[in-house]
Length: 498
Image (cartoon, rainbow, N blue to C red; front, side):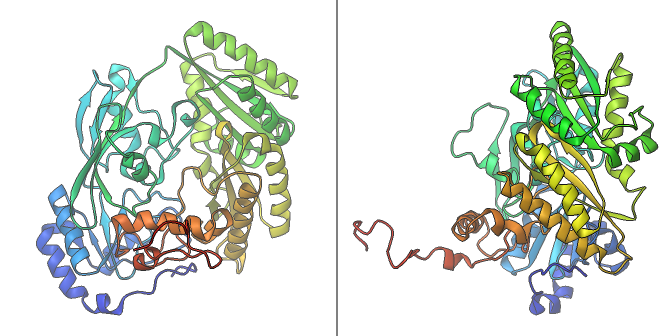
């Protein structure tokens, strides 16, 4: 049972479970509907495993028509729906509801079309992130956004959270690499946004859907941009005697006009965990490790490597190693990609946070996080996308020790407040979900949140899609449609009212 307050279950819906089950089985026959308690255990949580809740029913549709009919039935009968991809969400975005249907899209797992001429691939949302690259790599292409969970996370989930990865600094997040979507609204209507063409033909609803966390619709098809692999790619492994030195080095690399293909940073705890797990050859006598990848024409890469090494030496770098082969470059990244599971070997549990800050604030934030760790009595391993300031502090705790989960949550909340305090934001690529929901007021005013909820109302006026996520206080759509009176004054009082 989750410690975070979720919407109270609708007792009428719970009482109608058998009726709802029968209706959904008629829409998705065979093994497409799961209702046995034991079998539903696989869906009771996502990657934010501190919280668990069995869904009302699990549905695994295989066609767009089935998705449309399921959503239309739920709309007509006031049944909540939680869309789910691979379940790798770290913010609780796919946490089920007791009175809600969990709609798993993992049977939508086909690559539909590969169009090298237009450098585009059309896939279903259950295809894994890495699966797209695997489908095109023989022709020298790849899909750029590469979250650490890319071997498992689905492209539909990437769209829900606007996922990034180690190469998002130069090549962009999911929103910069998605060209088109087919999606189903809660009313059952099927719509298309964008496509292989470059420009949007109207309002940019495609960008609105990317990062909408399953609150606005259910994605059933995705068109993504693929890129040609660069001529050359090499990486530097740079160690620093202090994390603050590494932070200043990151800021100066970007200030010099150098945009690496990827730039990642780990602190001592994460370095040792990753090295013990992967044996990537990381130095163990440094406090911070920076991985900088440069790609492009060979002569340009050689020049930029020299510039980055020069900047690193100016910031007291004690260790600099440059990859001499493709195998060595991949080994550098293997440790970083495995950092999350590696940390799982040194702690029974951990919370993976996700906040973003201005690069220039890295030294200050790293120092403050150490102080916060002492305050809460917990260790933190820092792994983050240094180039774009997206932090992923891993707070280590033991759920079996009374009070440690609560301490970890308080520590995480303090880190996110710190991110906002220095001019950053609550999330970079993991989404808000339930993890950051109650911190939204730290960043947004009530009017800000109401305006965001008006967008939600335009797509889902009954609040049936993924309720309880993102918004700390939910207003009825009718309330949001009323005239806003501020300090007793209507807006634009000179305009005639009818």
